[in-house]
Image (tube, rainbow, N blue to C red; front, side, top):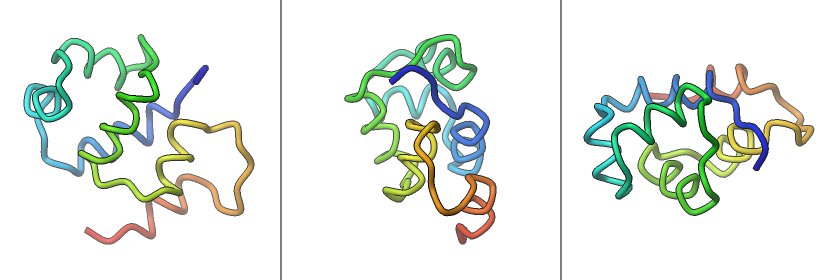
Length: 86
């Protein structure tokens, strides 16, 4: 995983209502690591990415869009986020 769509990941984090600390505890990593992932300082391992997806209730399409942004898809990530019902 070379790069991720941090803008979209942060949008889902923001909608989740989690704090950095709550999300970090949920996944089992440090608060600082969550911050670094959300701001693109570091890229999560596949293990952490999968746990982030589970904690943020991401669909498979959202997961791929965020963590594998270079894969071509039918819809843009902004369209996917706009369609998600909360």
